[in-house]
Length: 428
Ligand SMILES: *Cc1c(COP(=O)(O)O)cnc(C)c1O
Image 1 (cartoon, rainbow, N blue to C red):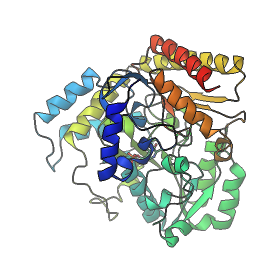
Image 2: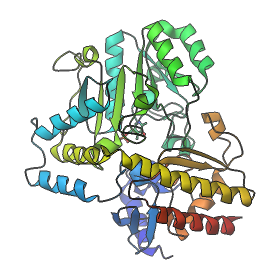
Image 3: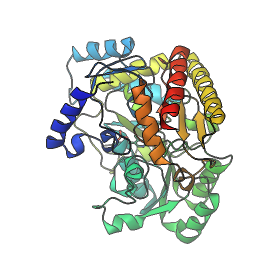
Image 4: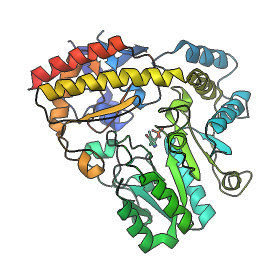
């Protein structure tokens, strides 16, 4: 496959933008070769500037659950744009999206729209600190909550990919206020609370971590977090930026029946435009300005285009069948891949939940950050490049999840299985 146009554009981009990109993982540093410049996308497919076609398993890192350029979403964006792109004043779409999300998330009495998942988590911990009068937060190794200072400590996503434990530029005082625990290790949480219980404002967690590859919560782990936070007067924040509307029409809190105090959302609720949101109990959310003193604002927050795109997406997802259909395709795909890896004698572990999955190149069971780090990332890098050659676009890091969309059909799965077989043969 020719990649010459992408290569030329990337060289030029590197002169003007750090690493040639606007977000680190896109630079393909953890895999072989250079990033592809995308010319267009449709349904389950990406097309690069050199005219190559790929089945896309990145889905813009999660938001595009309906696939690329879904007609209903496009129509909503165009219709909204014709009425102006930003007002700096409330609009109906914003209210409708708020109503729609709050009815899907019973733990959210009220919600505030922001422009990214990062803004949502930063604002949620500010609110948690204000509400509890405490400064410390607990996060889990390998979980990613955007690029706010407090979260860039043993973080997942691009930091894990680049092997940066804690970003330079984060003040020492901030580092001291972030306590680390191990996901799926209740004892690590108990010990932390025994030592610092009185100082902990909140525990923030991805209820299904998706930024160190896919890790599933073990039975009782999330319930344990609810218990311990309740007992010690800390808040529980579910960061459902990925899982919100990804696993069902609602969040992991819908599936587990756990009621977090605050929830952060992003990705899917923007339908492919930049959005985030945080919300929760009325008494907490009423502390946010202008109702209360906890300040948080945004020039473009509640943007009519983004609100309309999000609303159109959620309306499509209300047809719960979409989740079942994605699960069928994902179950079939992962089952066949498992057979293939098994037959060929690879060390591998596949974690899957609904439309999310990760193939880890390791024979360890994957339940934590420690386990994730046993993966053979060099093998993943070769696999990634070989798959591109076969027209399949996997995430450019072992530690990012593969996302199916409702546009992925069994036919895409079959093509992917054949591509994986060829790719494995070339890297053996
Ligand atoms: C992507 C992500 C974020 C950050 O969202 P951005 O829109 O990239 O700022 C936060 N939390 C989780 C769990 C995420 O996956």
